[in-house]
Image (cartoon, rainbow, N blue to C red; front, side):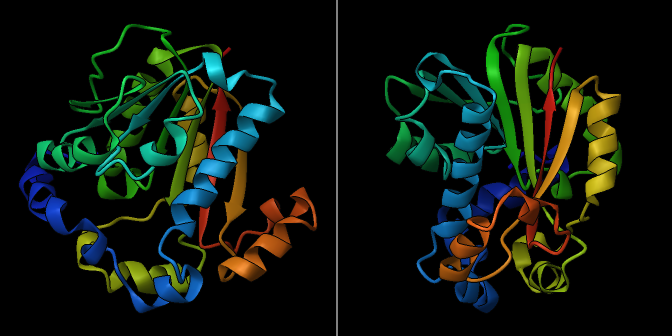
Length: 239
């Protein structure tokens, strides 16, 4: 998870105990096995790729603010190349221990200046990044994500939903999120547009404990429009 340099030491300190630091009784209620949050978001990424007709086996995907590499273990075997960036060297050391391979790599870098060529990736994503950053950082970082995204590619950002009271409670009572500033879906969508991304779409996810949540998605895509999910994602296309 990328953050300003002033927070780097704090996130470095959390690297070895990250799973414990984000632990919360309400998380267990929704995600009893401790893997559903990440797996669902990986599935959403795969759904988006499938919906727009991209071929995963030929795609370069960039995870901006990858933290300890939670997504890489699932997505690394699906896409041609997966690159994770984070400002915390300690978090990247944890990620590299379990997730490095020929198709996955991790780089320590600031999100404002990602050391990749322009238009090199077909998909760029972040997960719960922006609530750790000052409000003014959203558009510059999204512009950098847009820069490295190829034409016709996509930028996807997942965030906690401030419209959900349980999400608000979890964030307020989780030490790692003590300085979090939740961003409203409409504000993040506006930042996407200001960064030059088109076809902006919002989807809400994580409505209930996993068994019920899975059933709800079977009701159809209209569920994504219900604004009380615990998290949401914004999708934008570079044209």
